[in-house]
Image (tube, rainbow, N blue to C red):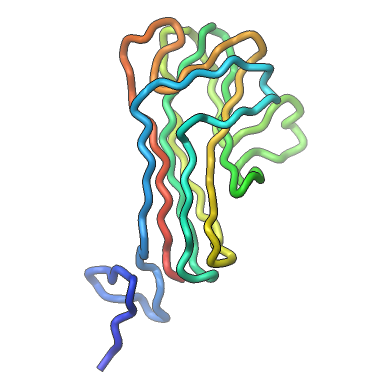
Length: 172
């Protein structure tokens, strides 16, 4: 007779050899209104209001899968935009190579026009490393003198979108 692990979702085909792999909890934050930020330059990242999430792992050996969809526009065409992911205030998903001399992010776009919304979709698998609450948040940047908008085009408030961040604890 086997014992069912509490606080786990068992896959339809059963637990894989060695156990683990089930989703033990899911948290999600949905942002369905507009947020804007005046930029101080591509290397000046700011928190995206409403795009943070906290999760408390049930085991330090578990993994946390972070998924996000961010839709944003810029007040000016021919602009660069970046998104990066932070864990408890430290960047965990951003380019670190030698060629990143201007600005580095987990996602990059070139806004060809203020009439477009650029979607960013990404995910990152992190190690829980403890059982204390972890806060993940997203930051953004664009070129100096421009304003970036979450969930809308830079040139107009027409055609709104929805952005979200999801945290899932995966048993190890």
